[in-house]
Amino acid sequence: MSAEQRQAPWGGIAFLAVLVVLLISGGIHTYNWMQDEQQAPVQVIDFSGQFEQLDVLKLERLIRQSQPGSFFALDVNDIHRLLEEQAWVYRASVRKQWPNRLKVYLVEQTPVARWNEDLMLNPYGESFNAEGKNLGLPRLFGPGGSEKTALEGFNAMQRLLRSRQLDIEELSLSERFAWQVQLVNGIEINLGRQEFIDRLQRFVDVYPLLSEQPKGVSYVDLRYDTGLAVGWQNETDTNQTKS
Image 1 (cartoon, helix red, strand yellow):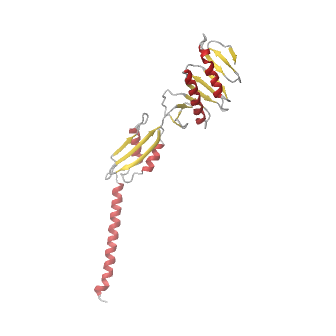
Image 2 (cartoon, one colour):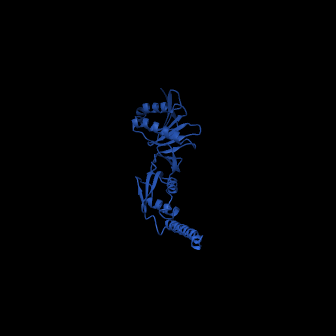
Image 3 (cartoon, helix red, strand yellow):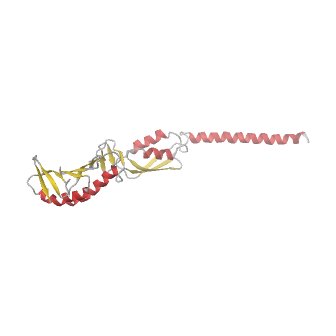
């Protein structure tokens, strides 16, 4: 074997080694370029959806602070989790759009009632942070874990009361699950624990008669099998009516 023939394999190996080094170097350079925000920044965060309480400028700042890298380095799953952790975000959808845009679709929480003063309830009985906002909603109170029960009771009672153009201002559910209601017109209704809808129907039936009385009604106690007790405004005496 000649000297030239012996050198040929080593020349091929050397060429291959140089090629591998160049590929690795190029890959590292490309990776660094893709991670560099200055080279491939996220220029636009496009929010869509219908919302009234959400501050999209605040959300954009939050996204940029949590994901300071480039378009390629941005993790849409992390942003999705971050957005759904925010108080007024019910659902979020996040995707990248080439070459420099982030598309964010938001579904805002729909508040239907205040819960224990500092929280709100959505239509599914899920509580979320009200962030100090007061939207003039009905106030519901109850032990922890009773959110859905309280809201279902509220909805059932409100449907019944609407037949007399009455609205609930405050509803309380005790630790023993006894119901008490205060109407917008100031009347307090004590329903107790059992058959509260049937008892409220009794109030609805007698309300036209009560509203015709010369004195306003202060409270109605329906914790009786077949009757009710009425407290009149400016009176300490209780008049009890049996049906």
